[in-house]
Image 1 (cartoon, rainbow, N blue to C red):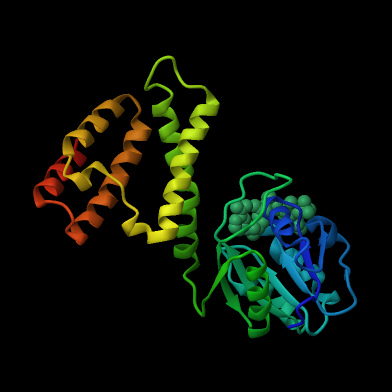
Image 2: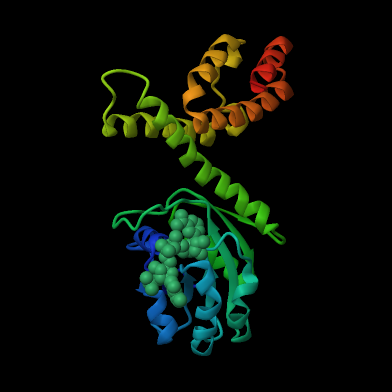
Amino acid sequence: MVRNRTIVLVGKGRLGKALANSLRGHAHLRTTGGRVLAQHPKRLTQTSCTWILAVRDGALDGLVRAIAPVLVPGDVVLHLAGALGPEVLRPAQHSKASIGSFHPNFAVAENHPSAQVRLTGFLFEGDRAALSEARRIAKLTGSRVAVATHVDRARYHGAAALMATGAVALAQGATALFSTAFTPPPNEAWIRAATSSLLASVASNVARVGAFNALASPLMRDDTDTVARHLNAMNTTPEARALYKAALAVVLETLETHKTVRPETIQTARTLLQT
Ligand SMILES: NC(=O)c1ccc[n+]([C@@H]2O[C@H](COP(=O)([O-])OP(=O)(O)OC[C@H]3O[C@@H](n4cnc5c(N)ncnc54)[C@H](OP(=O)(O)O)[C@@H]3O)[C@@H](O)[C@H]2O)c1
């Protein structure tokens, strides 16, 4: 693949803008709106190029059918939807383009002008020529690529959603508890700083040692009294309590497997889960 071939990023939504910000200055980049291109399909460069379709999942089929007539051999067409494989891009393959599903495990929550996609794990599934471009683009964002030949999309995308949505749910639960835990009550800025620093420090631990070794819990000191007090204090916040218990159940499995705490600790904690 030519190192400086043009990347045409289609879609000015959350991920499209963030990916464009990461690639700008590092690649020969053109951007265009998704709906505009679907209605008026045209090439943005006369030489073969790499199209990244950053549009909502439901719009991919219509968009790829619309641009198929303007594709040329040597073009690469990638989409970013984790829930969909490369099949949705078949019309592009019929136009002799290479295709690939190229999903970043990265959450962009808002259409923020300076958001960037950085240091993530992309999953690629598709043609060899498309893989070469996927690798080049991932490298430009400091990211890694895993290459799959078969993907259980529901399981894979479920994992990404568990992480992205679950972490937000945990932050919401902690926010509810922090805001009623002391007087005078904390302001919004303090709560954001406290919850985000906890998330960021956990993220850094996971990056360094992996999810199973990143655990920090009173149970690791065989302290079940503290866990009992936590659960008791959460009686008035049932959603936070349900999250806490779900997390505790998973953590107990890990602790039991690794045999790092006393068996009585596990037993007492399991009893607490029934409360
Ligand atoms: N946001 C994330 O955290 C995230 C993470 C990983 C993967 N993804 C994937 O990235 C893709 C884009 O997601 P997003 O979060 O950026 O969505 P988004 O913010 O809702 O933006 C989607 C864009 O789709 C385009 N669009 C809507 N209807 C269209 C149509 N009928 N024809 C052509 N284009 C149309 C629009 O582009 P224009 O405004 O330019 O017309 C819109 O801005 C999706 O496949 C999603 O699954 C998102």
